[in-house]
Image (cartoon, rainbow, N blue to C red; front, side, top):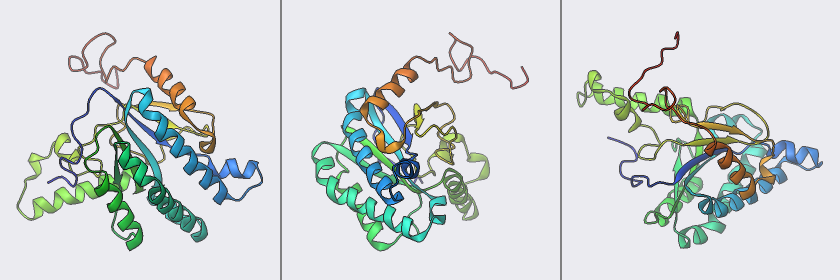
Length: 256
């Protein structure tokens, strides 16, 4: 039923943090450098952040690597981004496997070049038995596209007579998303000072806390992540309930 059933075990007490890695181009522009060097510096920031995340109480880290809209960028820049993906996994997969990091790629795989698809599948298969830390990379991903794909998958089951429309619940719908079987993020961070979601984890972000940081992604590291977590921990998460009361006991009407 699910595209990812049982791929991830149930979560423990660790946090799930998602990051919109923004600001590579502006970082490069301010230094008079080509955008490609900003993207390369961004890969180094990803490496630093992944290495430091598990020491901050994070169990899962989801990063927005390449969106369905990014294909609209100039072909040369798209090619550079594809090359960086290859470089990252080729150079880091041994370390990630050795350090107990499980890699998962979410997003559309149809239409990807064979060499990219092979790298994606190899990264997942080589780390499939790791459970110390989970790195989820949203690649060729868009929140709207993922919801549409999930709706189409369920509609096809109904058309084939394998399900009925009234059987659809939120939990069942989630099983058709590319993020199925992974918990929703507790915290979503966006770097560079921009304050928008940009089509990232639209279904999953329903009750996530949002933190926007005034730092370009290439300058990011564990100290910035630690600051975001500190801000997150100072907030009260009510999930629609009145402060101090269980979320399931009260429903807050929009008009009230």
